Length: 498
Image (cartoon, helix red, strand yellow):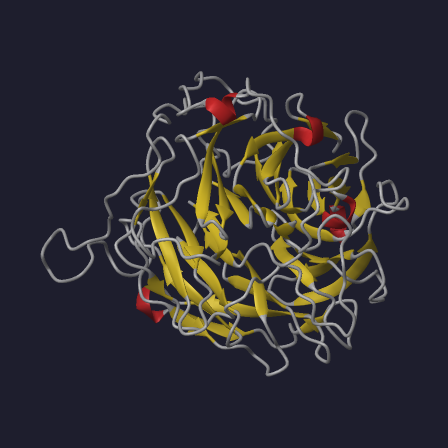
């Protein structure tokens, strides 16, 4: 049995390969062993047999307001989801006949900018961002051509969440260029297309393999993989200017190692807390002291008013999980109010943590659980209102959880492992079974749709999010695969929806 999972995305730069139980590449022809197979949804589940979503009722979300901004408009009806999800037309062409794609260059006004979804090719010969216009019902239409980042990709999976970022206040897309160490800033035009990229070089030659990027105001932090002899690091940059005059400058003193100063600890994601005062980073391979045999850690860094980060703490995983009593291998995460929801790939589940004052601690919920199981290989996390969605590379599917006010997790729906929707492909042949699972996900800025990148297919799963209970309803009869050649290349990394 051959399984393409997030194990392939967990880079192994260390002298000894690091295998994650339940999340490894298996080239045998045996059937999946007990506990490894993804949950099959009952045929009555609308997400499987709906050729399109019914319009959802125009009702108020049960959110307590903890996810403001990301969920504006959630209570509006998510009608018009019955479109087939595979429009043949492309946008961003020269409709005005002036020889250039229509839409202003420079920072587009947010109110006027078209809704869109972006992913990234990560090609060595020249990295590009691929764009899709997002229709009212969630459907996607490929833009006319990819947008060069001006940098180079790695040509391989990054094993990360957040390779792309979208900054709502400035209306810019940020992309890492893993092949040359740089990152790019691309302003969003009014029609959703992207303007010319501004490339920002790394502030030090010791910064190897950018894989995740975070933005707050005019401050950007990049997470670097490192290698067998170079430490994983973070580094900060100050962004100034507008339009074509944007520039990024390294912040002096902001280059900091993670828990090991000697070599990579295979980090997965960096993000600012919602107030911008802290950075959170997940390490897949180390413990809090940098030990490479550890279960992983969650790291925090304080950020002052000048954008300078300082080390605060390296926190071990909770000891309430299912693998030898330890929750293992933190990967992706998302914030839901005062709760940090983290996928724990080594324990096949998801955990909830508090992050007040930069201190990571397991929740002690009065309702719900601190840890709940998922389908195998949970890697990426996205949130909308009071719900967290985990993309399981070995499902291949998406699990969903309600986050209670006390930080507890409760399964959405009644399916085992909280599975809400299937996405990706499971291929069966005489040689065995190959699973082409999710490789990242993003919730649209209005909180109405979840987009799941299945880069090995390649395809994007599109799901309408119920404003009532957080359940998912497929948009279209199947995952979206563009009919235009090259519009979504195999091996694409990162996804953001605006």
